[in-house]
Image (cartoon, rainbow, N blue to C red; front, side):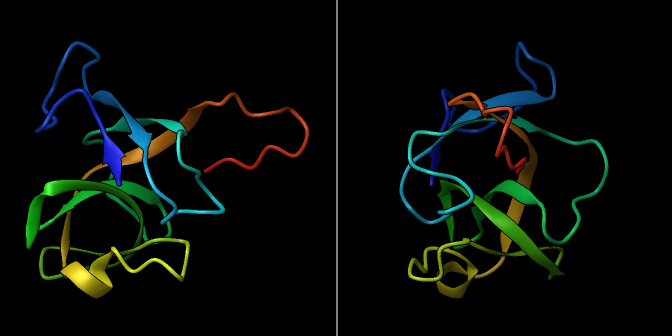
Length: 117
């Protein structure tokens, strides 16, 4: 799951960019609880394998960061990287993508051993 300063992301003071804070273990080991991400709304189309911020059609109030797996029913099937946590499309079904994760900006990545998201 993620949290933002807004309940429904729209074009705000940062234009198509917005920030989210990762909460919970569903994306470990790629992302951890407390990681801060910069997300881009719009732009090029989402590709399978990318990290996205989305809402599930069955739980529109739940904002999540997941990995896009495949397009499905004009939305996306999304999964967390942690196989032990099933708060993804396996439980909630098709998701609507709000934006693509561009970068993790906190904690700052180290120059050596840095793995981009």
